Image (cartoon, rainbow, N blue to C red; front, side, top):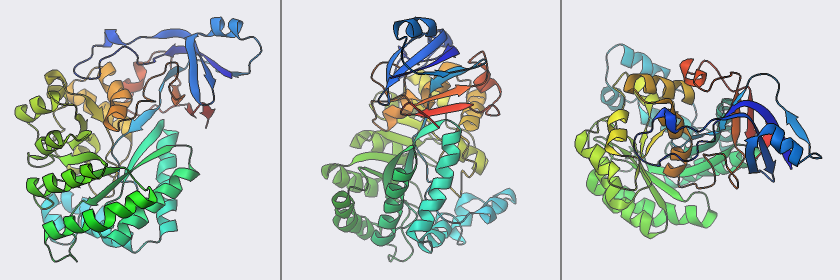
Length: 407
């Protein structure tokens, strides 16, 4: 066992609702607190001196100065496994071209597919690890990572294998997701139904044989896959035992309804969602994952986070870190800017980065700090938890722990 502290404040993020709005007075704050950990999990959290006196012989990880402790962040939607960049796309958007215009002229997702196909598995692993390390240093201890830049069985497997190897080489926990249905590949004769049938018959069984992922995603949008395509593919993947998530309502609506109908764990993006979609998600067990990084990268409005919360949805916040629409990758900065624009309370933003993000990934062992939960933690160099969002991402954690181990 080990005792870590004292912390000026600990926010365990306990006792708050899984869905709907949260007020800041629902935040429990433990002053001068300590954390007792053993074998990577939390044993107790309470007053530091009380824990020290009750456990006089255990080692102490002494915290000096003012520090605020919160759970590690969970980034439940990223595309971190890729090669190259799309700085040219970004410049074209700044000059006035749209996302769809750039894609039609040879840029967009297909540009990254070409660059990723040309990279070897080890190169992809190394690139991924560098990005993961950056996230980890900023307090993100669990990271969902999608494939989707291979768009054929061989290349998708290469990406997923790179993610698996990277997971063994980093303290962070990587959650792999198969996004082979990211875009209809240009080298598959432009027939979506045949491509998706190929994924169901050839790719998904191999993913299961190699235990590369248990989650499947699809991009439901004009220029990607239709609602009918998605219903078929997700139903087949669910029948095979995969968990589901959906790229939904980014530019047009319809994807969130598919997510709810198929029982997906989450519907992600939601920039185009209106009142109907907000109510639909609120009445379901599908988490609403908003991606402020994509809005910042594309210069478009944020997803209606306030309306989703007020309707009663489970709102998670993720970075969408990818080479095209969301290259920044700074989860805390993005969440702070979203919170300011959408008038989210501190409690709502922190919940969206922790235990509600865990819900979007269907992980029940992290996101809060209490007995039996993973000791995934981060400490900020301040005396008041409100300063974390106040500096809009400029303040970074001074200490990060994964499974109780200081990094």
